[in-house]
Image (cartoon, rainbow, N blue to C red):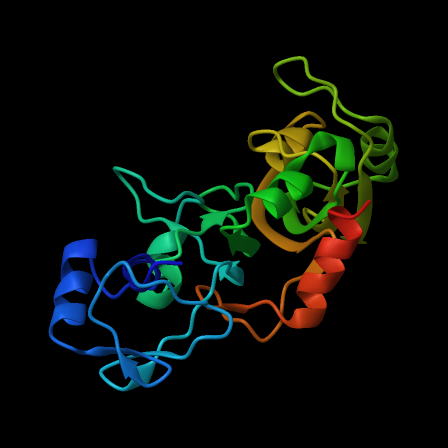
Length: 240
């Protein structure tokens, strides 16, 4: 890879700014000053430094976020802040995107990556990747609702959902549930409960496939996936 492309990808400036760094002798590769932007380096083996600091090269980024309410699941939006606005510059520079969408007022697990192949596999309807949510519901959730969800319910536009697993945690005027679905229709969980005459008042995603939300992540916080989490995701969904 050309040294100017590597440094630009890692957020050291535009190609023009990177060329200026090189021209002034501020970049070294394996302890040798590099001034030509066309010099090729091996990102996996070459030790590149800028002002004496080692450049940590990453091609792909895999982040687990505990999405807070009030942010939209997008890379940019003209009206609202996005989940990408919560990222540190060294992560944002890799151009990651959220895998799937959580509603603006929904919290919980969101995978953010620039790995298009993994994202496609996780979102593909053919893969039936389960997504589990915790929700509070205005109204008493019943065994009849549980059976209806298992068969599939009809949404307001006539769409019949795929079978879903509803687990009732607490019944009352405000019930607590966990729901696992394998689709990602617009406002799906909310619309499913509306189809049985009830209203979602709080919604949080707990898991997506094998990936579970880290209970130590506060809302708005994120971290890189562990090697174990990433390997499990890739083995479970890409190599099938």
